[in-house]
Length: 636
Image (cartoon, rainbow, N blue to C red):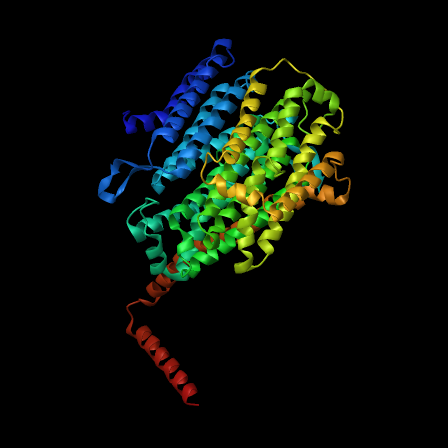
């Protein structure tokens, strides 16, 4: 039996260690051909992690591994192997490896390969730490590693000298609002937004330790904790903790960083939107729900309030993201908005577990897996299209489809599989999700179900739009340079094939939970929703663009950028001014007014200390006269 400690060390350390040769080589010989060839070592490191993650998935029994860290404080390295972590670890490692293979070709001429590969592998290792950690402090280390790596990768092309790396039309403005964003700005926005949620999360973790004496998610007596701190305490504690997942997963109103994060390389976008970073927020909420078991805490009103809030926040974010994607014309921004929509559905479905039970967490998790493979595939195809057409906006027709037959076929299968068209992969998972929301009608009404159905129909439409505008009815590309790429098509073909594997697992009942998906998929209501999704897909395939003010409004993300770029900064500067004036007042009062007053009174006291009795008698008589006058006035 392989030593678990060594295995876990290799799982996390190998990707980072294997990226160090090209990192150091690039410092001393940037651009050298021999240095570029060291990229393969980084991908080998990712492959080692993949092998270990698969070994854990197929051979490890459910349980925990504890390695002493600070035992006197009950803080140790605690790694957990359960249904969620084993599948999520394999998912993360597999997608990172395939994207790494793709990146060998996509990034081979980049001017900062050492930086890129180091932070790409740190990104992967950090996500694996988050996935397997049961200890919240250890999880926080991986969580912060994700934030640091995202900043480094989103702003990778920091020179801001390539139009292809921007988001929006350069120079475009709406009033005082700039509607274009550079890579350096995208990196800054990502880290600043995420940090806004990470700080409350950090304090919530500290509060959990103070209240329970442990940081291990699976060991906290959540029911007892919520009973002790009451309804208000529960809401404050859990909502403060969830600020981290909300910002990481770009839920409203923290969505803008996800759109402008498209300034990074496409490989980064693919990893960011499929199995790392944004998935970390939803995954953490599922993990919490897995061990909190909210379906057993109906007496805890604070828990119900939190889960009700997450349910509607997720559905609102899903509807917003789907609507925005319907109006977007930039390839990667369209896919980014769709990711926000999917993440919202995951949050909402997992939150429904309070009323429906553990099955809702299963459904949300399987949707995460399906979405990860499909979205990674579409991002990799988008990268290939940008690479070939030198255009980040959707363009392409049937002539392009004939020249990129594999990319065209892969896009068809990925969009159909993700949209929820029967009998493809996402249909069975979304049928179960429909059933979850249908159960809520007895508890909180039909709003969740209706919002889910509307979102599903719109979701199918923008996926068809992506297919149509890039391969069927889009503008003719101004440039087309296919350079005989090999690794890029291999990578996204392997990625999309995993959707077929998932479909085989569901239909073949290999995964026990899939039996429930099959049953829901054959219900009339699910088939009706699937038919509506198919109709939406077909109509949008034929008419892919919204040539109207509504389409422009959606494409401008409903002017949500104004919140980040105008409103919040103005409020921030106003607060800063108030604080500055307050600081000046304190400074004047403490360093000028009080010393001057003391100095003046000191001089006055010295002046009356002449040593003559006559002066002291006059002063005493003066005080007596004042006292008499005040007394008489009071009596009067």
